[in-house]
Image (cartoon, rainbow, N blue to C red; front, side):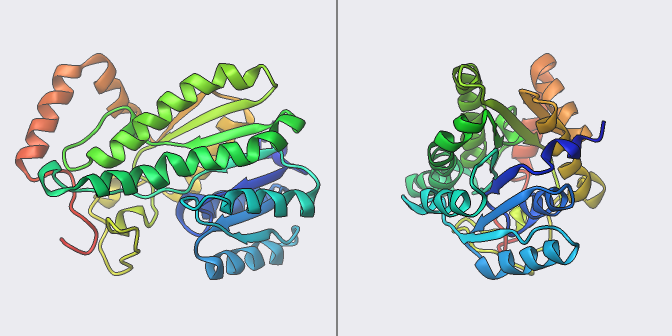
Length: 278
């Protein structure tokens, strides 16, 4: 069975849909016949994406400008979505970014800013959508990261936020199953997107190079297909990308090797620097 058939006629709300994984998920879901609500801060990019999806002969997605760090924004987007589509079947909490830097060079404000988007933004999304999701016995999708399994030098704020997402998913999966809600945690490795071109203030540095070797970066289209397959199958967690699976396996079964690798990365100045400051 084609996994995308699961989404035909379902209403799906995606946060962080203006670029990267969120944008590609929206495109593939549109091709599957889903009724979409696209949210992000950059409404101009959302509007262009919505027109591109509709031009392929599928329903025009609803566009809602939404900042997941602001109380009330996600609630407003959910209200608009249910007025337009009449229900909500799937919510994909995808909005996020990464703060990087050596611990001694970061401040408490850096960690707070990271958690405001990557942790509290996800919580705001789930709290806003859950009453409607429970009505349909639908799906909550949390986009975490392989960094939620294994952290890297210079990446402590991001890894902390993604470890928190894995803990959240682990705790609420059995809770929400009592109301017929399925939770899927998505843990990608390196996927083609703008996330590594966003600086510590959350601003896109469009000209910044991707610090990750291209042979290690998985195309967004492939990652999105794997994500949607995992959601359609009702999986508890899906680790996306082959290298992601290897990194998780090393952390779980060869922790001494993981520690040795991290010492070498730390000695070289961390796995990457802030976008725009290489």
